[in-house]
Length: 249
Image (tube, rainbow, N blue to C red; front, side, top):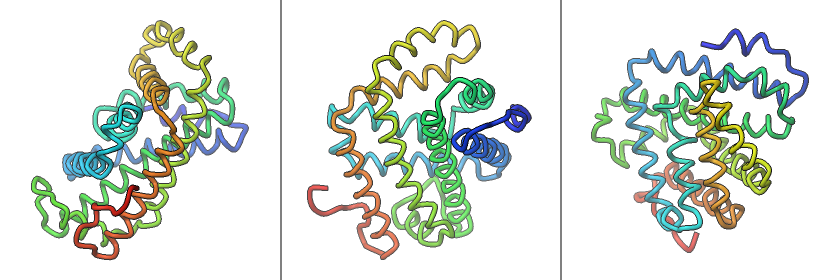
């Protein structure tokens, strides 16, 4: 919807250019995905994976110091359905973002966009592989999922997806420790409503609030990354129970 605005906006830094290119790629992917015959299947894949992540990290998900942050990750950052207005509004305000935001914050936004893009591209690939194998996505199970996963042609992107979780999580944690950001978000609520940006403001405020409540974010990210890398290794090795992890991590 706002692709021309993205293209026409002049950028003057590496961070702004990275964000622009990622927003363009994400915009084009969203247009491709919405017309894809397996669109509804991608939502089922995403839901199955979200439930798997909750099960693998059940101890962290139920921990009062981590629950809000992980819930935000699974329902807002990893939410391929229901976020069209939010994504359109990010495209719409891009000219103001590159004008007013510092490069380090633009780079954080770029990481969020890349994480969302890569995740949704991988979900679509899985849906296509499952469909090719005549698997019924309504009855998706671990065996079918792992067979499709091993057939993926984008394993480097799966490793990158895990790296992005760490990078984005650490960057967000640095920003939410700044109390001025919380004050600015509170002050911006009414202007956001007047500009029809309530959904985008709500997304940012939920993220700020969720990460503010989290304890030891570095420790959480370290455990998440270790576990997800181990899960990936076990799937590729054909482990009979790839989502079961040994030890305290």
